[in-house]
Image (cartoon, rainbow, N blue to C red):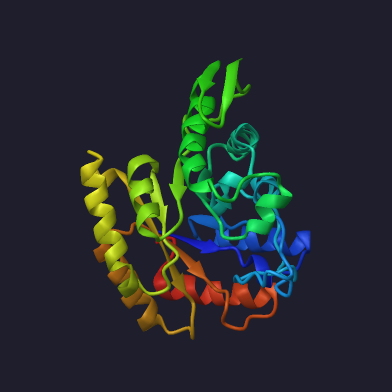
Amino acid sequence: MQMGVVFPQTEFESDPLAVREYAQTVEGLGFSHIDVYDHVLGANPNRPDRLRGPYTHESSFLEPFVLYGYLAAVTQKIGLATNIIILPQRQTALVAKQAATLDILSNGRLRLGVGLGWNHVEYTALNENFRNRARRIEEQVEVLRKLWTEPLVNFSGKWHAIEDAGLKPLPIQRPIPIWFGGSADEAIRRMARIADGWMSNFRDPAQAHHAVDLLKRALDEAGRDRSQFGIEARISYGEGDPRVWAEQIKHWQELGATIFSANTMGVGFDSPSAHLDALKNFAKTVGVGL
């Protein structure tokens, strides 16, 4: 069992020393990876269209690729997983370059989690189309894998055109693993066709049964080996009850999860040290790194 952590983006001080201490501490505790999620811009919820979502212009986010470049330099072995970046609002070739560079600088520790996002304001500001993002992401994944494995790429698609060009240097992992977020039926079918794994954001494994059943059927229909498709689940720290953690881990394992991430957000911690104290307790209780 791999157990990582969710970096508490929106509950963390923007202090590079605190970020370094967090990463080095969780690595020392034996956690397998750090998950970081993504928003480029936060919108005012009181704007005329009354945009509603879990984050606003007052939510703090560090950019994942830049953050991981820093963490790659101050850690040795802990995995770096974007969970998730919003791929269709980003230029595909640039993502390929950023990910390849990060994979090299981290010595092959990157796992690229991607998703569609919900905030149309970000898409508009980044000059990308919010309405066709589900269709574009499939072509993006194809382009990424070509750029990561072929020294010269010729590609002509609906949204991408590459004429006899390529990345230098190529990443260590060829290709870098691409995992998908999302829980809608079509998102599940899409990841079954083209992803390497699923980063679930269900808080309760009991809520995930439909998605897991659909995923298994979709993998079979796509002719893919279920054992080669990964599932990552989040385990909420909650009230700090080890019995709840054990029940959730067991339930998720029965559903096929092999990778887990401890999430200390949303329970009232107001400092980096509070998050770390919780993870120290979690690691000792669950047996992380054993």
